[in-house]
Amino acid sequence: MPMRDAARDACLSHAFLRSWRCHPNLTLIWALLKWNIDRILRNHSGIGLKTLELNLGNEDSTFPYIDSWLQVAVRPGLEKLNLYLYKKNSIRDLQLDTCVFRPTSELGPLRRLTGLNLSSVRITGDELECLLSNSLALEQLELYSCKEIIFLKIPCVLQQLNRLTVLDCYRLQTVECKAPNISIIDFSGDNIKLLFGQLLKMKELDMHQSDAVCYACAELPSIMPNLETLLIGSGIEVVNEPITKFLYLKHLTILISERTFSPPYNYFSLIYFFDASPSLETFFLDVPHEDVKHESVFGASSHLGELPEQQHNCLKIVEIIGFSSAKSLVELTCCIVKNAVSLECLTLDTLRDPWRCSGEANKTCWPISNDELKEASRAVVAIRMYIEHRVAPTSKLTVLEPCTRCHSR
Image (cartoon, rainbow, N blue to C red):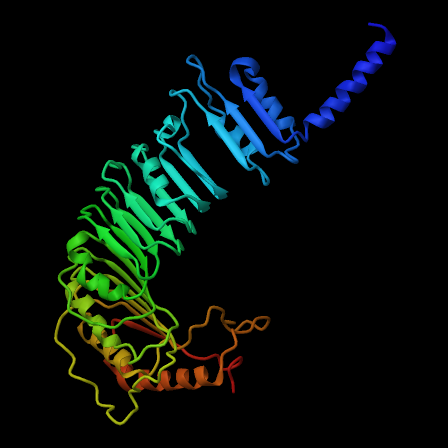
């Protein structure tokens, strides 16, 4: 080739290369490009890419690098992704974040999907149900802040599904779950109707919603009779009622969030859980400093109520965060100490303090208000007067008081 023609072609090649690396639309077809697809995707700058069509349909090839190709191609700014796969090729784990996803029943390559994670994804309940009904191998489903979902249906055909996570889907009104083999559910939401069939394999439940304690009392023993670990987060509780047996429950955590209770919450009602859970080993309770003034154990009717005689043979570890002088809380603790014959450790933290100096000179405790400091001081006195002498010599009592250095006032 003459030097002038070679120079002209080289200039054109460089100009084309610069233009192509910022081209907004790419269509890559396996039948034409073969393994050059990998090099093309890695050489493209990703700047300005709006639409990517990746057509890998071929009867004789499998593509073990699909995941890595998608990691290279899917970048901020991408608006449309068309992925065509032959039925032998499939995605096993799909994670989408902050995008629009409109699946249809023709998504054959997703039928071997085992993990689906959608975070801030615009997808409706009907579209998700269509996808789930064709993803028979799905084992884990995680939904975070998917605000278009109003009715979530988990169909019974998902025989392999063992874990469900639904958090912060604010428009969600109803969850209907018919997958029979779920063993772990992590769920949060307010005023959501829960329609669960009997989940005999459920072992672990993490649930945050209003009246969660009441719901657990009334519904869970019959729906999830084999539950072993239960975490309940609740902001408003109105009704307290006895519950049927949680025969296999071993670990119970109850978080009461910072909301106004009127009247103040009766913590002593939680004793129902101990009576109904003969296998319970650990109990963790996190309580707020209530906006409504609770009835203090130092009030006019300071006499503790009659404590029931009901032995708890398996309970070993109890921890209460935000322990106060609330009479119902003191009564609950006294009842636990009295009846937990195998109790090993009782920890009462008089503050809800995420950071403590632990005596280290270069650290300081989290600041607290004067009201919190006064209540913590009353809680310490209540422990000394009503609880400490009831603790058996074989049990270790740990009382976390306000820091004498950081909270000296």
